[in-house]
Length: 152
Image 1 (cartoon, rainbow, N blue to C red):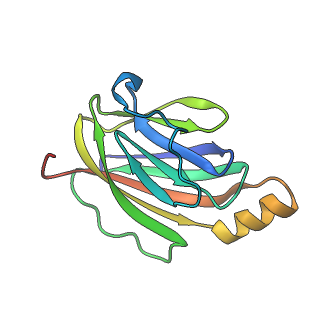
Image 2 (cartoon, rainbow, N blue to C red; image 1 turned 60 degrees about the horizontal axis):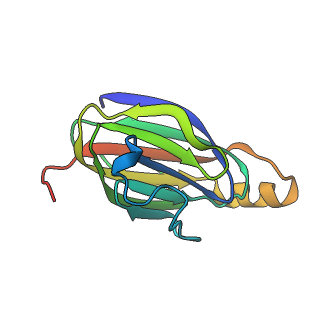
């Protein structure tokens, strides 16, 4: 593992995303073409996540690896993998209401990356956001980035 970061991400309208830091090279910016109900959706130089809770703060652990990491142990409520291309080596976090976060994930180099996402706490965050209106850190994501061995 090269880097590990813990983030609090403000989820609104059940969505948030990660996209290439240089917005000028992203074909469709976050929010557009967001697919309701699709846990992990790949787009050009961007990927979106669909949360089980409408509005809350999710705990997100981002890990950057030099090569493919071992599969995470434990049970996931949801999981998936996508390809991701970056032209700068930097990834911005986006939310539906706040737009682009000030936080930048530094992958270390541009190119093609593989991304694996696992999530827990989905049932509980759905319940809490419906009954109490808020939740903090109940839904948790682990997002692994590692370089692809091939180019598209």
